[in-house]
Length: 354
Image (cartoon, rainbow, N blue to C red):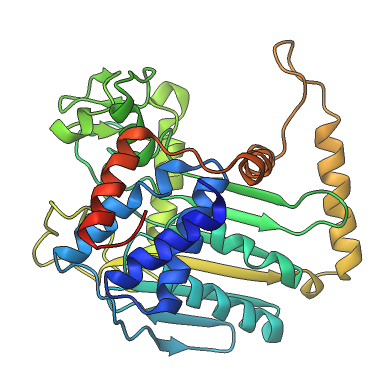
């Protein structure tokens, strides 16, 4: 499928589901960006969960997304149970506007939902010669070190930094060894996973990607204490705290599930899912050309490092996604057959041409 075809289809589908054309376009942009950057776990397969949540009454397609607290450099936004992309885009735009005036801008979001790939929002800052930061907490599927209780999400964080001649530095990653969507893809394909990613309900490591549907949990980054899982636990916890405590969203085990078939916990503290965004202007610290030139030098230095014998070169964060995006622009998006079958069924249901 060509990129423009995918954008058109998703936009028409979400308009048919009740979104405004502007909101539908934002949702389409984020989902297709995930596909083009080689992150299908956050791409078109999410349509199934998103529209399922809408049908279950968990998504508001006519939200009143608004600022509920504000200073010169900070703000809190309430998403009114919107698709997360709507609140996320507004919040990042607001952070950028504040950074233009104050040097930095920081915006926390509450009462939102799944917002797609974190990198999409961080990259919004690049064209303004700013560093962008984006993070969100997620469904509680992660067991802290020494626990079998699912308390935290995969909690991604993204940082995008502008450059002069080199491609921008873009780090976009879950703070766990694997994301839920990637487990779902493995399960769809009938594949096993390597040890060290998940555990069963008793805390034993497993190679079954579906184990989390039967009481299992994803492990923290590091897998076990001897390999530093306590540090991965800390990293995931920090994203949860930034996404919930600053915004007033629900935290940790109370983050509402982003699938239609699970109910949120009763009497949960806070309001819905939360995100956190930042924009840092280069010229708040040094002249823009100097900053971007130093970024080029950093990247060139790391590219020149000696690779191990099994690899041709050392990659810079953002390289794999950039190379995949170049390939996708030439060859189009490839959708997993099982996912495509489900999407076609949804298209028929909403009377939208696929």
